[in-house]
Length: 476
Image: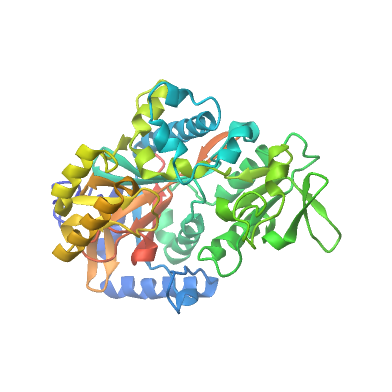
C-alpha cells in the first residue's frame, strides 16, 4: 500500500528530487548537512532529554522509570493553509463533543432523535449515571482534548480517535520545540514558525475561565496527580510548574463546609478548579470506587453543589469510545447543523451481526480495536499479524463482539525520519491539543507528531516503541 510522503508528495521518490514547497527550505538545509551532523545532533537531543528528566513509564517494565521516548530531529511541517482547515475542523468537533455530552447527561435529544442508539450510551462503561443530575460549570464537559489525526493524501486528513478523559503528550510537544530551538537556531531563522509555548498560558486561562461562580477573587487551580509512579507524572509536574499552580495528590486535599481545601504550610486554602489526571473511578471513594486511596472523599458532593470545577468533567470518557466515534458525523450534523470538516474513518461496529460477519471474513485486511482501548494495546493490525494472531483475535471477537470495532488499514502518510541507516520514511500521526473554556476554544498550532520508528509499522504509540517529532505550522 503506497503511502503519501509529506515532504515529497504522492509521486515523488523519497529523498530524490524536488520536495513540496512547504518543505523547500528544510530540504535545502538537509541536502547540505552530512550524516555525521545529523547523528551528532540526535545524540545531543537525547542528552538534553536525559538532563531534563522527561521519561515515560510502560507497564510491566522494570526499567520504566528510566525510559525516554525516542525523539526524531527532522521536523514535520504543515502550511498555514493546511493548518487553518484542521483548526476549523477541531473547533467544530470540540463544540459538537461538548454539546453531545451535555445532552446525553441531560435531555437526551440526540438519542430520542435516533442519532445514536440508547444502549451504546447508557450501557457504556464510561457512562457515569451520577452526572445526570450535575450540569458541568459553564456547560463544558471536555476542557482539554487531544484529537488524533492521520493523513492519507495531500488534502485527506482523518480523525482516528478522540481523547476526552485525560489526554497526555502536551509536555512532549513543548519540550520538543525547546530542544529543536537549541539544536537548530539557523533553521528557525529561515522559517516563520507559529509558537507553541503559549499553550500553558492558554491552559491556565481556560482553567480559570471555568471556575465556579462562587469563586472569590482570582480562582485557585491545582493539578491532581495519582503520584510519582504514574506513567505521565513528568507531564503532571511539568504543567503545574509552567502554570505556576500547585501539584497535589488526593491526600493534599480535603472537603469541609461544602468546599474543597488544600493543605498548605499557611493553613487551608480553598481550591476552585481541579485539573485531574486520575481516572473517574478513583476521584471520590464515596461515589465511585470505595477502595480508592488517591481520590478526595466528598469531592463529588462539592462538584454537585457547583463549588468546584473538575477538568475534564467525570463521564467525558463516553466520547472516547470508538463505537461512539463511528457516529460522530451524525453527532456533528445534529448539534452544529454543519457538515463535518474532518473525515471519519469508515468503521464496522462488531456489535452488529452483519458487521461482525464481514470483519471475521476480512480480518487479515483490517485494524481491529477495543472500543475503550488506548495506548495501542489490545488491537490487531491485520496486514502485519500472523495467522495464529488472527485466529486468536477471531476467537476474542466471537466471545465479546460488543467490545470491538474494525476499520480499513489506512496508508498513513510518511515523513523523513533519521534512523540508524540514515534518513528514511516513517509513518506518522498528529495529536493537536484543544482547550475549551467559558472564554472560547483555543487550538495550539501544531501538536504532537508521533512516529512509528519500525520500518513499515503503523503503530505510533510511545507505549509500543514509537517516537515523537516537533511539528511546525508555517505562517504564510
